Image (cartoon, rainbow over all chains, first blue to last red; front, side, top):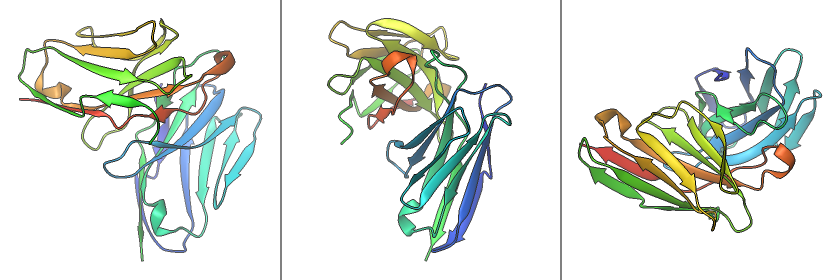
Length: 111
Length: 115
């Protein structure tokens, strides 16, 4: 089951904050976030496991609400280098290694 | 450089033909994933192998098949090609320890154009 991401696209000015949401209709074991710049391969950002954990990486952090089957990616004080398409991927249960990605959120940062 | 090597980088072929895409995972990674990305589309999961064994399957067409060899490289075979098969095909590898999907390292992709 493909997770649903919102918004589909967002344009921000440098320094503004962004939130990207990812939701699933089924129970989740883990949520994975990747960023893909135009013409490049996706690059790993972080993994969140069930248990409602939060993680941070510089000014990019994420949360995972297991009960709501939702995850959010937070980009604080966005930089030009944050531009790209963000994908969330979900794994339904431990031992299941099928990683299914959402349709992506295109983030454009303008000066 | 992710350490994952995919060949060829570009491939142009005609409808009805068959092609093979090759992937060499990072050293030490036992798990290989294949994804299809059509123009401006998301990453569609095709299939996953772990140490030579098929572990998970997505909506992979019957015309497509894959395998992972003893040296851990993987090949994705696409046959009876159609125009709609034109896409960027990514391979990714990971250590995938203990049944838990870890960080995927993606290759640069193989761009297939079917004319």
